[in-house]
Length: 337
Ligand SMILES: [Zn+2]
Ligand SMILES: [Zn+2]
Image (tube, rainbow, N blue to C red; front, side, top):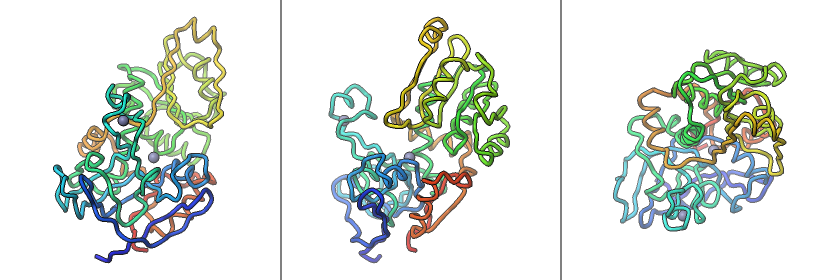
């Protein structure tokens, strides 16, 4: 093993390059992971353009899986050779939020790819409690454990009812996972709202329900629940103000613009007992995600559209920033070029 490794480094907003650096050594309870697959997420695009703040310079990538090649002396659950996925929000377990069991609000969160070097590199260091055994699951699927965990948390927050009619707004990879989970939890029908024609065609092929291209095509008071995977404040308002049935629920899951405002029809939301529910990241859902994938309860392999070399990562981050509808999940699987 060479003592140098390649990584993608975002030195400041708008600047990224592939660089070579010394491979780190695991200390304490840390694992040194040879990354097998690392997915590009919207958050990485935001770290690149500066709309999501990271500790620059940063190696991005928080959706990854790989093989543990060395472990620190205090590591208990893993030995070299273990195949693991990473839960990238590693809490301190000792702040007021952690002590209440709300670890996803930890005040001292360690986040590879945001405030620690992440998975867009040949090797990465992760604390043992952030690693989960994936057995023989392919690394490309292991890299989807993190996004699937977030969607599991979201559907738990939403609380899907038996035979309900649901709408998912946005049919990117996250929206597709969301629809599949809502269906798996017992919904009778999952419709989609998606204006991009390529994504809409793929959503239709899922066979879960009707796909609408525009909110204006959707009648009033039809859905028991509406899950937003777009972050568009105007759509969230329409969901709460008219698309939901009395007692309907609206899930805020897509990342909104920092200054986004949702204007509610206060009387309607009051009179018809509409619930607005938010879901942020995940809360100890990684083992569920691994089990749902391994058991094939939730299919994810068809979400990955491109497996690329690390050197192509800057091009794809820019294409994602430009909103290229051809891209579903883009995953780096070759870190040596
Ligand atoms: Zn992500
Ligand atoms: Zn904490």
